[in-house]
Image 1 (cartoon, rainbow, N blue to C red):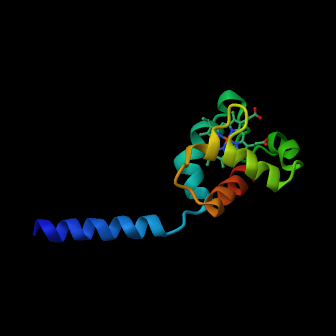
Image 2 (cartoon, rainbow, N blue to C red):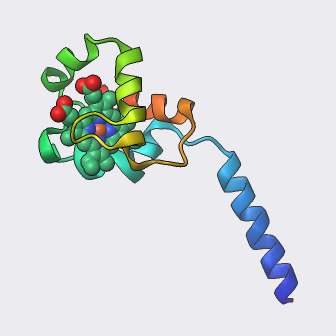
Image 3 (cartoon, rainbow, N blue to C red):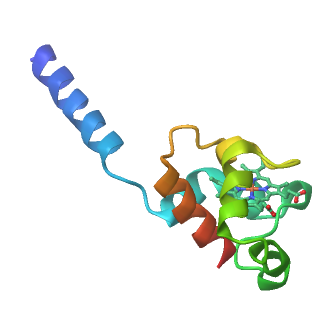
Length: 96
Ligand code: HEC
């Protein structure tokens, strides 16, 4: 019985790590901590005025800043397990 439960748990974990997260999921798990309230000057989710000058830099720059870190913005926005695609989706969700 114990072995079966363990096997089920493991397949559950594999399934969870393989399914790509949406931008909204990543945002709610990692980015909201700072971007929800504007902690340390983080542009708030959906705040068009705050995001406009940042979006002007282009998505490539925003992605590099999110991936490598930028001032008080931590590298990967603390989502170290995120793929590039998931991080990009989270940036798009965050900025719009
Ligand atoms: C520990 C707090 C914190 C977390 C967590 C965080 N951010 Fe940030 N983020 C910041 C701060 C602060 C800034 C503003 C940096 C500045 O311009 O001074 C910022 C700026 C940004 C920018 C704009 C960079 C630029 O070039 O203007 C992007 C894009 C971004 N965050 C994406 C994300 C994403 C996506 C996540 C989640 C995966 C995330 N952040 C999680 C604090 C955070």
